[in-house]
Length: 191
Image 1 (tube, helix red, strand yellow):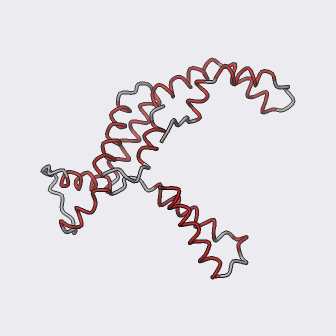
Image 2: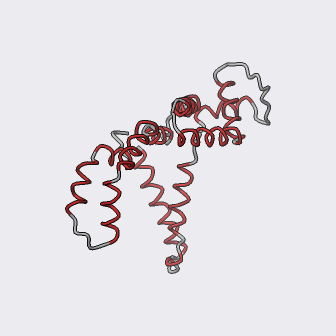
Image 3: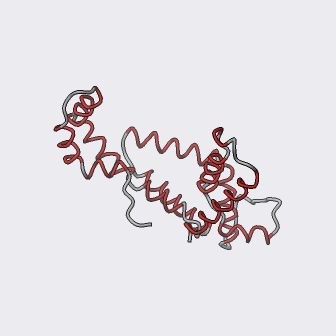
């Protein structure tokens, strides 16, 4: 996975360098004037520090969850750990984030189902008396069930690009070849 730096971390870690570059620019455009005003605003520095200290870990959480080799247990543990870290955050924004996360997790029936399946796969008793129409063999196949749909959404975006309106000259034979190349390229990138 390497070191991932999101924009919040970048701006926090390089605030003074970016500010000095911005201050050297001529005030010819409104965007440069606005940027200078923002960098002079003490609230911006405070807000960036608050965001990094409370939510800076979230980009790493997202990257970890995109790993295809995680077991269901590992994925759920990452989510639970992130939730616990968010619950420790303070401030008005943190309260909104905590409320939103709580609402999403309570509303998400699939997440509850995955938690119940995880308990079964770990040999724990399920107090909720989880019942579904899956056989024991099917439940055992869910050991590596993904908890996110990032991969699926990425595929849809790639396939949507294939059928853009400016691709009217694609004949079916070339379309098949394009899909095969796209799939093979994607498979090699994942190795």
